[in-house]
Length: 359
Image (tube, rainbow, N blue to C red; front, top):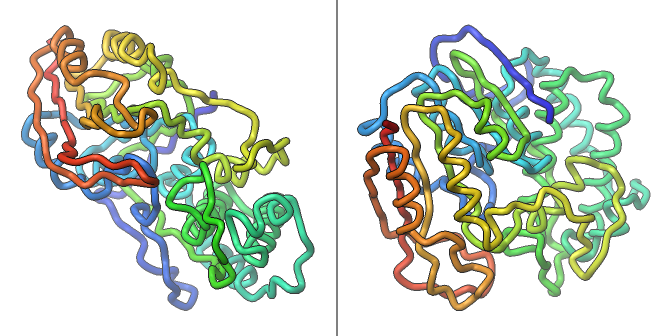
């Protein structure tokens, strides 16, 4: 798998709030995304405990998802490592985190051009033919597909950072108006004619130290990973993220895959063992092979969910037992209203944070 590494010089985290050489426009924060299991609303609680219990200069987020945990960690730690199997998340990390110089005015001009296009003047494309009138309004789908194809054709005009800022902005802007409950397992059957598409820019992050970005199996990465603190937020149940976010995967890859089923899913790939019965076995293997001072694990207690696909794959007692084999473990819990993307009902939901000081 490909690894991208960036070293940089600034002494503190700076969030770009505007493109100085271009007129101001609404922007998108890294937290502005619907995503199952997102820790955006738990960041203060997580880092309250991490900062008190853990010491070090490097932080690895090996099931990084949206990247919000790493974005918060970047305020404190000199070295940040992000990893996720999804192609769309890998692209997002490069858009937000890659510390490469880019031309703000050039990026703004691309966005201004895309926002000036009338969908009536755009021909149907792969995206609109497959997802228009379903996951997106047909006019919006035409624009999304046109922009993605144009980015592919004009990539030579952009450096890696500029390209991924625009691609990430497209992923976020499209996801914002998707005709779904927050994932792409299904879409609403009602009218979606009022969901107009507007291309909005993300706010890239600039931080001190270094950022390393991976797209690997976390258990394989563990054999070569070195960090003072390793944060682990694995899938909790049988819902595969690569299947839930297949539309964004297709948009990121833009490989015109053969689609199937009512949800028009791409061929299976990047299926996680953490969503299967062997979850506890692969978790134990991961913990055994980590070279770190502290291990921080997020998990929840959806064991009594009425939906079998939403129930946890690893018992809390099993997690604690495995972590205790690596070092002294403390457990913290918090009541939290989880992101319910469907009809799953569950009362008394709690988030758990396990922090292990490695022997």
